Length: 276
Image 1 (cartoon, rainbow, N blue to C red):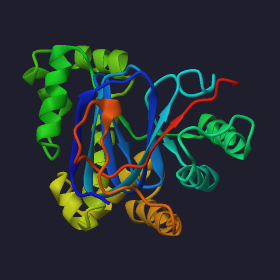
Image 2: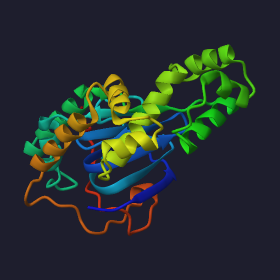
Image 3: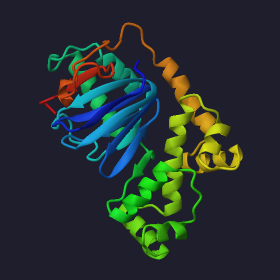
Image 4: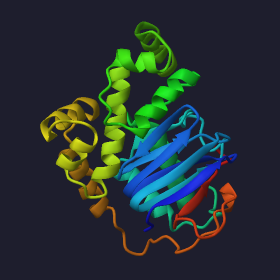
């Protein structure tokens, strides 16, 4: 377990998987922000500059995967849903030695783990970030004050564009309309606050909604479920994921990222399989 933490921008040759058992993890690259709620994971391809931070009390696992371990793993950064089978494989692998015997039991379980990872469904918990300086300024202003109810046309004037040009460029750069992008931002910010124990009413008002009902409607439309159900399903899964005899060390030299000791207590496993 660890309270708020941050791993500054870095990159490494191996691909990386952050799996959140409890708490929220945020991963940021130049093109976007990914949120990792409990029982989800973020996949980060190798050699991709990124930063990560934990919000509130977090418990997570960190997996490093050799580039040639499997051919069908994701090629881009994404948030994936962790099935009960994949979760148990991750927890089981926590007890494996760094150099396990090829062709043995551990090797076969790792092969299954990689297969499950490749087949894991992608969660729509990504906030794309535009590259255009004017749109980037828009994104920064919305992030700084997500409750701002300024209309789209007025936002366009603020950043020196016509409303039509801003809409066209947003669709071209991030594949979302302005309204869809702002709703996605609100879902991400809401999950961060709700997992810290804030009430739905408090979060709704903080994000500029007049009441909880309007916020819940937006959340269901964007995430597919109301916030209470979304979080309760992941909380119950997190409670059932506790396995005695597997625990993370209190301190770990996070040398793969060039980080000093004293960073969050990860479990770190490097996966490689030259036979695949």
